[in-house]
Length: 135
Image (cartoon, rainbow, N blue to C red; front, side, top):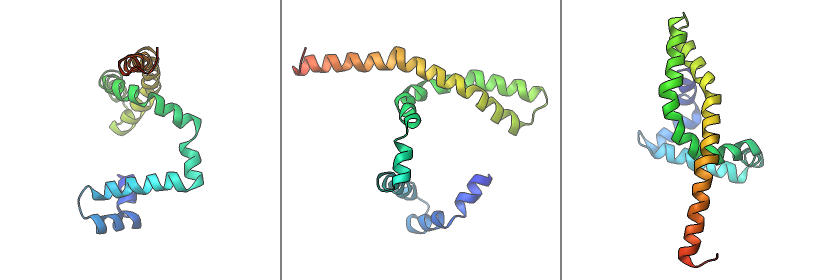
């Protein structure tokens, strides 16, 4: 709630709502501003070109595919255990998520290496053969 309060009362947010109204247009405008910032402002460009963000970009699809089962199993179980042992809902939810995050990343990395990367390689070889681009 504090984060949304800060965002919703910011001058940029007010300007975007004034221009776009209560539609999705302000999300589009915000995305366009972020892209322009990343392309044209050196500190932002260097941040987006950093090795750790590029690495997360590589495993992002695998993370997208694997995080929901982990959230519904490990994270929920950890939340229930913490909450049943006296932690507040707020604290238990945050600790459960933070505690399961390394496992989500490890599973995504495993999935990337075992499934995603070989699948991309296989599809590239098949496409080259079908299009006659090489061996």
